[in-house]
Structures are given as structure tokens and as C-alpha cells.
View (cartoon, helix red, strand yellow):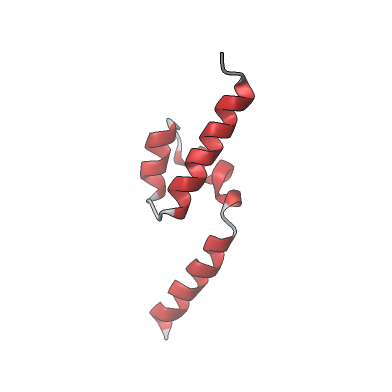
Length: 64
């Protein structure tokens, strides 16, 4: 029988994998079963700090 922590760990791992593959947040929201996109974004974007450097690079490339 799974404990709540097992379920939470699995969900966090799934969210991290989804985030690192570049999946749009709306699809991650659906896969994770969140009714509101803000739950997905507020809960899981902190686990992907390396993505901010990628975002900054894309913005720079777009304006240069």
C-alpha cells in the first residue's frame, strides 16, 4: 500500500520530468490533474531553476 509521501514523490518526479522536457504547462496541468494552472505553476516551477537561464537566453536571442 502506498503512503501519501510515495504519491507526492511520484507526482513531483513526474512534474520534474515533464518540466525538463519542455512540455507546455497546460499539458503538465492536465497530466497532473490540476483544475487550475496556477497550482501547477506555483507548486512545481521551483524545481526547475536551470530553466530560468534557458528563458533568459531565448529572450536575449529574440531581441538581439
